[in-house]
Image (spheres, helix red, strand yellow):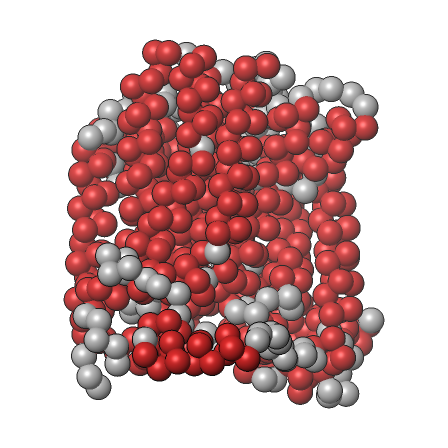
Length: 555
């Protein structure tokens, strides 16, 4: 074990040097440094007197802590999620497993390199944290030190999650998708059981409280002294419990991953094919039918259906009917559960907060599923070599593009329709909210359009699906989370007019303002936000159309 963690580990040296030489790491470091310093500058008090400044130091430290946690949550899992699956696709994983290196050395080399890289990314925010400390009002022992420990724990946990999923995945985009879904579940959805159970005692209450220890939100609310914001949920865990839960999850996932790093387990038996026993007469008729009508060789596709869309649904894992039914069922259950929570009163949130939670749930689902589907439309075909086959078909470029886009559009529409029962029940409880619910649904349609068009446009300029997926996530996070950072700085230094104009670029903020979510009551974003997001989506689709036409031309 000591040798696995030593600096003489060749996997550690190779992985760490490759990532430090990458331009993506440099861009991530610059983004974090500029973002954290800019956030401190935005929230810096205008009064220079120490007694007044010290009282507002937590107002500067709190958004900085949440911004760093968000950066770790979205930047750290991308590297381990593609580490082992890329080794498998390149054929080098078998070489590593048959080398003198032990599975523990391979695992700890990749895991520790990602943790060290995460710490390097966090280190560029130290000037911003030092500025907060210089203001007074916060201490290293109670605030800055625990925050750095929580960020370190998030890095080791998400690195273990990424490697655990990467060893079980067959493609990079699937590994990225499942990694971010798991990270979201650990960070946000782990609080769900406590919201349903409430403050009940017994075994179920203990399980609900234990799940909250998996979320960094329970630790950040203690470090930033914002317990009042989650007191209604009854969260009682802090950063120490989060460190313990993270250690347990990391050890368990590490052991499971190392158990899979076995050459015998890497051997996959090729399918032998289907064996059918048909009568001789049936075989003769079938061969004659094939000679007369070649269309009998495949399932009939009507002329009014785009064959590229059918191909996407039949070849994509989440395009299969059983997967769509599972996703829709999960969304229906969660939306109805949130509505039941508001109706039964286990947590006194109020209708507006329950509706805001449903809106955030839908935006999170669209953000997770949309880029993973849209980013592989063009980049996935180019990476796999399928684009050359599509070029040889008699279909025009606009028909290929429309078929691919519609395969994503129908999936996203099913996600939106799945949460309609929750809004219907909410409208039945509060009839005056029917008009607001209609505007919320329109805003969510523009969210889906924005996500699809942006991720598909990025896919047209990327060389691989993994790069397109990561780039799409970063751009969408910049639009959705970046505008909310300006919203957090409302009143200091940004005025209400500037904040409202910035929120026009975020269709999710328009949905929150229509539902009268806390903090969004004073903004009137519709219908101007619909025009802005629709114009951006149209520009992305126009760019993608031109790019697809250029790619479809002969080389």
